[in-house]
Every structure is written in structure tokens, then in C-alpha cells.
Length: 202
Image 1 (tube, rainbow, N blue to C red):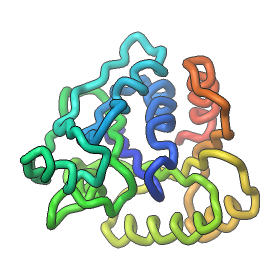
Image 2 (image 1 turned 45 degrees about the vertical axis):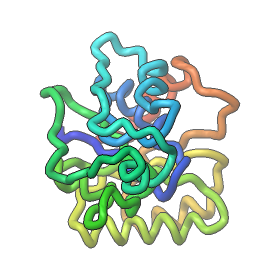
Image 3 (image 1 turned 90 degrees about the vertical axis):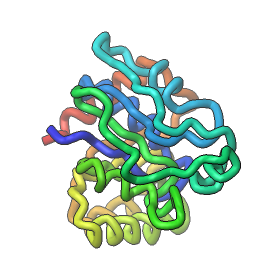
Image 4 (image 1 turned 180 degrees about the vertical axis):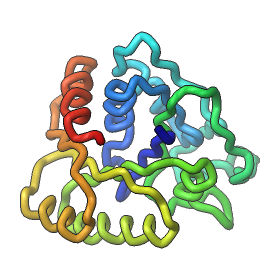
């Protein structure tokens, strides 16, 4: 199985929760190559995964400012280079991006270029709101223009049956999971969604 890169249609779409669910379901380890600001998503995922084999690898870039990685790096006086990223370890990895696909990491590259550089399979997270159909289909268009291998879509948050239907109709991709709007996420809920994910994972 190829390593999984979790990206989304925007910031705060639910990549971190989805990453925890994927790690739990696939007995995978976790890596967030770029963290801009705190709290660290690595800490969140680590607190939600129950598998005894789980391991979280440290970030390649741990930046201090909650901003686009290119801007946060500039504040910290560092330059992010695409060739700086190499897969840590030999375990199956769930790799979480920062923000959406087209978030810049420098003047030439974007977050999604990390997935291509590391030859990952893509899981796209779509949270449903007014405008999310457009944002989801545009993101898929971008991924396909870059010849990315897309595993499927995970919908996160308050359900919208018609939005989900039309997205899947045009996407031609499977819905891997639907995560409901939850008051809080704990290990038990992550485990529940991990079992649901495996029903659709082929």
C-alpha cells in the first residue's frame, strides 16, 4: 500500500481527525511535514489513536506562526525546499498536509507538491458549506491535472445529502467515510469511524 496524503478543500476542513481515523483503521503511523503554529496536530493525532503500533514522526518544519507555511517560514528565517522532504521510517504513513492543496510552501511550490514528490495516494477531505461543491470539484480538477492517484473523498461535518450526491456524481470517486458533526472527538469515536472506513476501503 502506498503512503496516504491527507489534503482538503481548505483550512479547518478536518484533516487532523481524518488522519487519526486513517491511522487507527490502517494501523499506520503519522507524519505532518509542516506545522505552522500551535497546538501541534501531531499531539492531537497521538492522543486519539489507540493502536499499540502507532508512532508519530516529528515534523520536518515546526514553524512558530499560524500562517501560510511560506510566510511562517519567512518569519522564522528559514526556507522550505521541496527536495528537503523524505519519508521517515519504513512504516505505512498517513501524511497530513497544511491547509488546502494550493497553500504555498515557497515561491515555487505548494503543499500538494509534497504529495507528488513523495509519490503518495490522496485522500480528500470535504467539509460541506455554501460553496463547498465548487471548492471540492476545483480541488479534484487540480489533483487530476497533476496526475495524482486519488483514493476517494471523506465528508466531514454536518451532512448535506444533495451536495454529497452531486460531488460524487461529478468526481467519479467513492465516498470512503462520512464523519458527523461531533461535540468532541475521543479515542472511542475515532475507533468507531475507523471501523466504518474499513467497510469502504478497497
